[in-house]
Image (cartoon, rainbow, N blue to C red; front, side):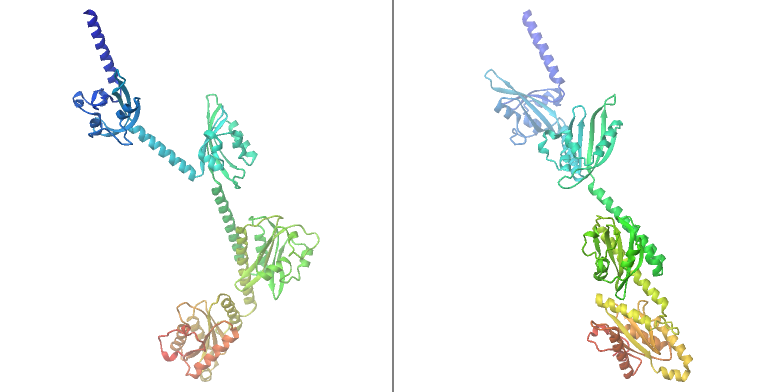
Length: 610
């Protein structure tokens, strides 16, 4: 009896110990009958009381359904254990004791009877909801990081100083155009990293940073050509050291900054170009005569630091079929003597004057077009720029460059801009100097005289031929002016001419020109005005004179058509004026041309328009 009692006590103690051990497990623990799927036992961590488990099946308790799971993504652990007779681990969506759907990692261990048949399983449920969420967030973060690195052309790496091994991220292989499949586990030899540096000095800079025991360092280096392209890499590194300061590991990122550096260089070039144009404009605005203008332009352009321009050059002006060296810098007597009788078509400068196209050569000795040679010449490159204005080629700018200098498209465009800018100012200065030397205005009326009229009409004609523009010529005179003079005297006639001149000036645009053609006859040159017929302008002038004076005027109008010259237009306008006189005066008449749209549908006195 004593032995039986001891045995029972021992069994009871062991059961209590086993129960305590099971209840101490921090996650749900079940014993489930594999045939009925009923829960026979659970621990405290499940959150369920014994009364909750009475006749409860595992699928009803945890899934709130009437039969076991039979889905590919929700495999029933009991079914799997019965089939394999081996422990299994699956993930299931279970309801916890609060009824909340949670993701659990389910481990099922089979229990066998004496015939080696599975009768029950021991099932443990570990809530992995937060863990899986964290893992998914980490995967997404890693994916986003990889994507950001790929987009930003950035890779990361670390170097084990003691083991002398270097590991690259996938982005590093992509960055340097190296096949990662040739390097298991992304481990690369140190020799590969060092071979990427195009300049040995840059590896020395890295060694200096490490020797100075810096914890972080940055380095920009140029790679050897990768896939035919040189890259500029910005590397940022952090050094991990032991307590004695010895290097353990180096962690770093490599960022392809080639495009950024190229953009910065282009911005610098653009700034230099704008600065050059601004400087040139300032010089131009300070000069009013050709003698002072051209030397200053030449000195300014040869001081630009935009390419290898020598402080040597010249400006040729084209005049009456000849080329005159109007400004020069750094030329000796032989050069000046050789070029004193230059003509368009001679040598390189003459070819540019003739064709209007820029010539660039990096070595004149290899250019067969270079024909004017003299003793003591040095090998140079040339940039020869046509100086253009709206009316033609005014001259040529000849610049020297160091032999072998290549002029890129940006600098070529800059020289073209300079050529146009200088060409226009040369043209304007010529006109200014002509204006100074000639009296361009009628002293009585203050209007332009015949000389000024000729200049203006020829410019209009040149632009019309080049750009297919239209312009109008209006010839007018005062009706019965001789009778007015005979009645009131010549002094009164002069006053009348001055008064009418003021009316004319107030009746036309600033861009149009009115000139005293002779006596009481005037000529008006009118540029085409979109959507405003010339008849409106003519009628406004006629009516202003009629309203403000004691006399009237008659006007004849024509316009430029292809093939006509200035004299043709004046003759046509004069004939139209004669018709206006014949038809009763105090009106305007158009010359004979077919384009009636240019006459306009004037809404005033119909009798005044013919």
